[in-house]
Image (cartoon, rainbow, N blue to C red; front, side, top):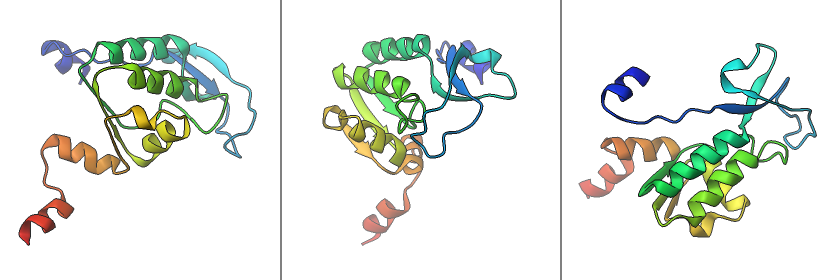
Length: 149
């Protein structure tokens, strides 16, 4: 996919740094130990649970330069104060941009609303998969049913 994007001149941004831990927090707001590491150096005994500050800045800058932003999925475990910084930074950038901002998916909708940025977004849908299928141009069953009447 990266090669295909490069051939077409499409820029794909991937995380460059990651907040990682040795387990997923349980309960979700558990105060766990984390480490900041390069995204391509995550060892087998750790899992990435948020984007790091370099990635957050990279993504925020991309949002500021965009005309339309579609966001499907939080940057990390936004329910945890140690793992929500990436989600906060991207949501803040989206709230401050003049771009059209579309949030798709229940977790993404919960994140922007919980963090206080929901009213700044152009559109929020809890249907993440449906939002992506709509953007692909696929027929949505609910819309098809309404159109049949």
